[in-house]
Image (cartoon, rainbow, N blue to C red; front, side):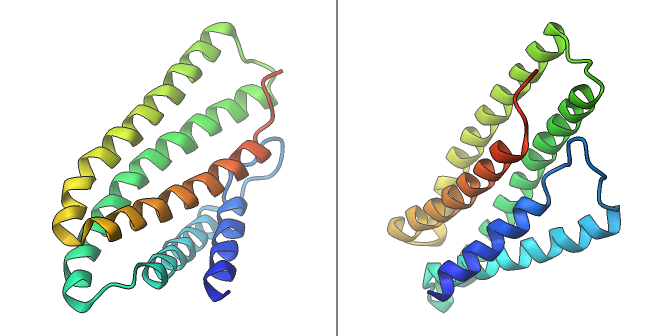
Length: 159
């Protein structure tokens, strides 16, 4: 039950961080504080669900940190895409050319995320048994699914 509550807190925190469309943006310091909290909560959620031994933990956490660094790069691309869309949406300035570029970037981000996951599988296998590697990827997928759900709910359809 604690794990579910922690997960729901994480999803709620992530939902607050969605770039605003037609609303006031939070300050940079607000966003930095929120991002640090999300990062810490996510690590707690992963730790609570991985059941790592001490030797596994020593190998796993550096891989986790590297994965998160790569994920952060993808998240920045997603945020930039949403910010661009928000500007076009709010200014009623989305054109076919901009929409094509937006779709291309969405697909590129999805492909980059899949390639990143694939590149980390061998690293995970070296750090932990395959079952725990699969568990970690499931946890990441659940968090991403919750985030994507929140994004889908927050971002309006193209006009």
